[in-house]
Every structure is written in C-alpha cells, then in structure tokens.
Image 1: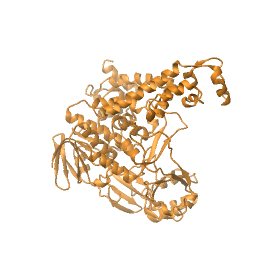
Image 2: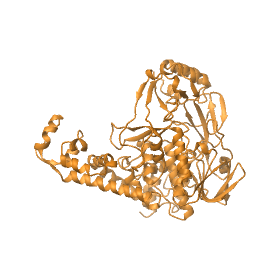
Image 3: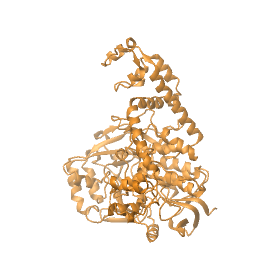
Image 4: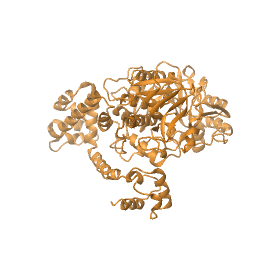
Length: 625
C-alpha cells in the first residue's frame, strides 16, 4: 500500500475521472479518492452526453486523448446530431447513455490505466506546506501525500437537497455530503459561494402510455463521439418520447409555489438560467400554455425513464398530482421525485488558466466547484486540470488552450477572466470562432497538441494524419477535375437546378447548396472511384470533412484571419509588469478588476467585464507597445 503519489484527485465524477486518467496516462503516479467506487462518473441528472456546444467539448476531449467520448460511444443507446438544419459550425452530437454501463465502462478504463490507483473514502481536509498543497486527509484518518491535488467535489461540498419543505443533507440522493474542505479553504482566503441545480422525477416505464406520446428515434449513420474507428456503438438503440404539459398541469404547479424552496425563501443560491425548473418556467413564461417534455430511457433494458424538462423541487404530492394531469402519465408510478440541491463553489477568478489556484501552489479545481454545470464542462476542466497537475509535478510547461483552439479554451477563459454569477453552461454563442471550432475537425485542431505532450497515442496521431491526407486529397481532386456540361446537365435539370453553360471544376459544383459530393459521385464515375479508394471504415467521415472545407472555405479563412489578428495580444504578457492601483489614467473599476484577476496577457485583460478599449490602449502604452 502506497501513501505517497505525484497527483491526488478528489472525487470520481466526470471531472475527476478525466483528471485522474490524464495525469496517470502522462506518467504521474495518481490516486483517485471517491466515497463510492460503484458510482464512478455517475450521471446524477440526465442520462445523456453532449448537446449544443457540449458535444463539441466531448469531441475535443477525445481528440486530446481523453476518455469521455469513448465511454459514451460504448454505452450509447441513442445518438443524434443536433442542429443539422444549420451550418456545420452549429452541429452538435448528443447521445443517450445506459447509466449503469456508462459507470462500468469508466471503471474498467480506470482500473486498467497504468499508474492509476483508487481509494474509497471521504476527504475531510487538505494538507498544506506553507502556500503549497502536499496531500489530503480522509475520514478514515489516512493521510496521503502528493505534489499536486485536483479537487473535483461536484455538488458534495456542504450539499443540501430540497423536496418541498423537506431538507436532506447530501451530495446526491442517498449519498452523504462532504464537510470541512470549504471551511478550510475559506480560512486560507478563498472566496466561496452557493449555487443550486436540480433534477426531475424518475418514472416506471411500465406505467407510461406511450401511445399518447410522440416517438423520437435516434440516427444510425456514421457519426459518433470518438475519432477512433475501433470504438463503436454496440448497444440496442432505444427511442425517446415527446409529451407536453398543459394549463391544467400549470394550475397544479402554481398551487404548490408557496411550498417551493425556490419561492418561499428556503433556497437563496443561484440556479441555472438555461435549464430552469418547471416551476420557474411557469412563472417566467406565464403566457405559455404548454411546455415540451422528453421521456428518456435510463438504460438499454431498464424501465426507468428520466422526464427531461420537468426538473423540480416542489413537494412530492404536487409533483405527483401535476404528472397525473399529463395524459401519457395519468397512471404513472414514480421511482423518486425531483429535487433541488445547493452546494458550495469557489469563485473561478481565483484560478489560473491551468486551473491551478492562485493562492495555493499545486492545488487545482475542476468541475462544479468552479461554478459550472454539466458533465461535459466538468470533464473538459478535469482533463486540463489533470494534465497541468502532471506538468507541475514533472516540472514541465503548463498546457493551456486558446479561445481560437477549443471550446474548452473558451470555457476556461470565461471562468477565470469573467467569473460566474450563475451556473456556467457552454453555448456556441460564447465562442467568437465557431466556424473554427466545429465538432467535425476537433481531431485536426487538438490531436497534435495532445500528441505533443504525450496524452494522445501514436495510433491516434497516425489516424489523424491519414484522415487529413485523404481529406485534402479529395479536396484537391475536386479542384482539379473538370466536369463536362453535356455529362452533368441532364442530372442538374432533372433536379430542377440551373444547367452549366460551360465545363467547370467539380469544386464549383460542390459549392452549390443543393449538391453534395455523394450525389455528384453517383453521376461522375471518376469521383466515385476516388471515394472508393478512401479507407472504408472512415470514408463517410472523410467525405463530410472535405465537403465542409469546400463549402465553407471562405468563412473559415476569414475567421482564421480575425483569430490571428486578435491572437497577437495573447502573446503580449502583462502579469507582474504593472501595478494597476498606481495607474490613475484608467478607471477605479478597471484598476480593481485588473488587480483581482491579474490577467496573464493583454488579450485576457481585454475580456474582463468593465475593461474598456481605452484601458487596453493605456496598458499597451505602459508596456511600450
């Protein structure tokens, strides 16, 4: 039994699992401490991964050499690509997962990762050596030493659950909360706060009238989360179902508002604005006579269903009565009610871009303790924290992603630069460079970065290189191949499209919105022959990647130019060069915020709320720029 490690990760949720695997795969002796080894990477809320912008984060985790994409594909019971009606910058993968198999797949990966060990226990205190963290102390009285500690406590720090006026201490239903760590860190100068999230009722599928719901099937095409062709979806695919609330349902819910913790003063903390409870919906959108709900299966064979859109902390009797007013749920039997949970978080402006705390060396925060919500946001932070915990103990350069490189870069920069006033959730609108941060090319953007630090394997890197070469070869073929008008015009006219007046490059035909490469291949034998020469297992993926490059080349190049121009300020170092409180030429607000955040670069300073362009000009002047 060892009691000294390079890295200790506290908490085995989505952030903790990614952090532990990353540190261990990079070579650090790593200990993952969790209160329950049977609930590793538990999907506390909805049994799904991905969604708008969140799916992009999972693709980025996979491209860097992380695990979430692989585990999701292995446990997926439905897959869909959201936002298909919009441009590829908005396409977002999402999968329903089997909750139990998701845990099993994660545990298998952890138990078979070299350098990674587990300990089942609760961490009650951190150990310090001056301004450095040096280990943790557990409820069993064991002290483990390490050069770096990653705190990923999720909703467990002083967690308190609410069902109507009933309050239960805990980090998740039937699981104890964690006490002591918040108070210890506050004593050392950390600023902590309280946030809230919630989860809906779980329903017995045997009591649902599916004939009164609208079926929503998944997609069976080539799309998935992991870029590795060996990773496949093998579980039975299951449908989701759409139902609606009504005015009758809303009347019942309104009757329960006096006993709602959100409206009777019982809950004081901030909840997620973009994932509101059902009681918040009927108050905020009082003019709407119905709200859409989704019945989502919790597993491949289970009867348990998650009622997405019906998150609530209303009393049990109100929840049951309201459900009974929905025709498909008139006879519903529930497994447990929805509930709200309050928990501690730490102001993320107290972090560096590596997710290391500014106050304590070697201490990293990741996940909901940083004021975020969502499995994907947590996992992305966990990956970066785990990488940088290893880098610190190994004496290597920090690993940071820019806003023009990844949604993960946008997420972390937003947190440490702007802070949070509500649980942070990623959206495509938060990224300035959405066209550059598409889900289809996360491997092209990030696998070289992951490979350079030793996290992405040689196999993964070689696959990325081969894909890029085949993609570029197809684009080049389209640039150089000439299409005769007499050969293609009959097809164009049959499709109601304008015929050619002269021969054109195949590239120009692909640019037409109504046409795509596969449609044209059916009419052009030479193109079909070229496609047939692409490796079969990734053929559709490569063709799609080439087509996106062709159709959106102008937009991509324009956004790259803008990103390059802005990125120049990312290289103008600022930290430690100016005493802001002595710069009277900028506002008091700017001086205070610059002092608090202590931005690394001028570009980061420019993104701090309250910092004006004139303030940035003055800083550049003081730097001699």
